Amino acid sequence: MKEKKQINLLDSLNQYYFDMTVCSIRQLHRDAGLNISYNSVMYLDIISYQENCTISSLAETLQISRSAVTMKVNELVGKGLVVKTQSSQDRRVFYLRVSDEVERTLDAYDRPIEKAVRRIETAYTPEQIRTFCDMIRIFSEECKSEGDE
Image (cartoon, rainbow, N blue to C red; front, side):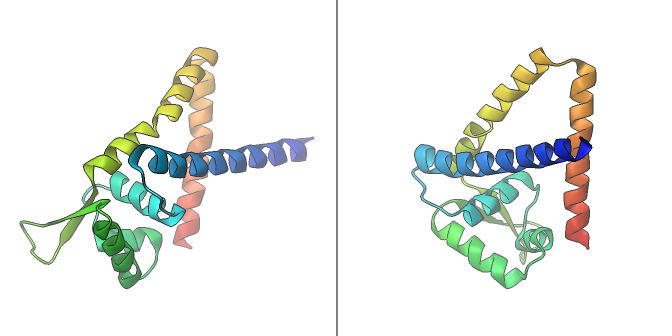
């Protein structure tokens, strides 16, 4: 019986990942008029999430070459989706941030998650929510450790 629960959990996680991916791409297309790839969405998400994001920090996060990241970032800058700002302390360093329009769109696609959180908070006890948060933390830890191998 335990095997069945694991399969259902895995299926549920895969479905959630698929739905979030499709939702992200659709919202960027609908709300910002952007017809961009999932790879571009991933870069925008990472740039938006990382404080003081640079080409080097992106390359380290994704574990790919700086030249590959530079090419992709330059493409996003060219489309007006990413803004580069030169560091005042080290003129060789450029910080990356998403454009204001992209930031608004990324905020908008957090809305379904915020709605789901409100539903969960009313439907489940604080202890159940803590358990769920612990489960998410385990998935996050495993994803991080997998990237370090």
